[in-house]
Image (cartoon, rainbow, N blue to C red; front, side, top):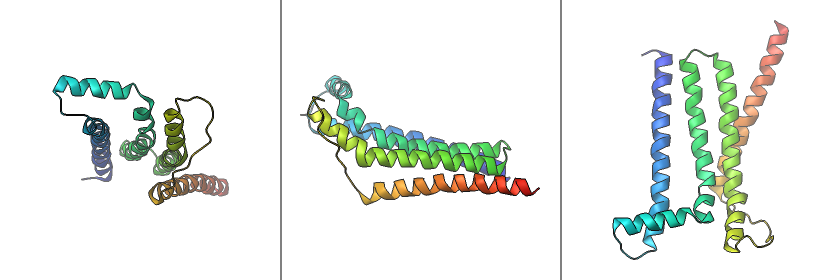
Length: 167
């Protein structure tokens, strides 16, 4: 199997995994809702899920995980670009930038945006109640890895332009 074929296979695998993780995320949110309710039939469960989807906390809690999954999808796009024959350096630089920025935004959402919006939604968005932080080692680590990837992409672009100026 050639390198482009391997990259294509891995890209497709990552996209499938991303979709499975997204489905699992939605299932997890639905189960969290149904655990708080008494046992009911399928129609009742659907109604509860649709009701929960109308409330802000349901959507607020999806911000960071969806950004993390977007980073995974961006990584699969790097592999797909390589499999199509795009220049390795261009594909990797763009991919590192995209993956890094999605990880940084996801971590920022998990650390600051989600806790703040959840608090505001508990107060029915009446007035300003400050900004809350929920600092976890996992989210800080993910954010720092994302920032590192983003900086590496920028450094790679700078080094490439310097090398091109020598030629």
